[in-house]
Length: 171
Image (cartoon, rainbow, N blue to C red; front, side, top):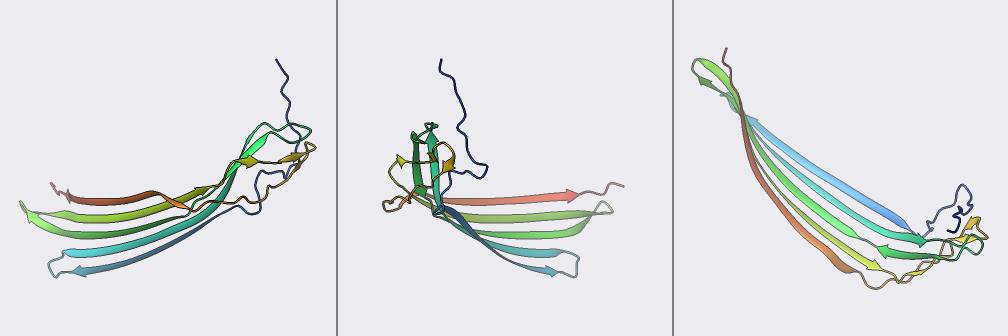
């Protein structure tokens, strides 16, 4: 069997390239309204909106470089933009009820949410990655050409749920 030896590299060596990035942006907005009744009951409505988008251009290196020439490493690169929006509404009612001579706490609510996500991608052709020169220096490849992006994933997610709880006072 052939001996396996590590290729010497400098401490700051990386297979990254200056043209790669992964930018993310996130925004959130919320509002809340509540009303307290004279009876002690409270109703509260909450709205939350989230917007998230990112744009990434990534580079993946693979293979086994020749320790002298640096050849033998392949690379692929892709572009990955995406968008996500989420709207969530929550309605909560709290209060107390008198039952069997004691006060008991009640909470009940309903929550509904919708998320929409779109993800695109485009891949460059696999190319030679001249990662190592004389086994010691990393050389970033030139940025490849990309085809048009296509919609790779489109998801709509809906959630509806209700809940209720009671704190019963037995003593």
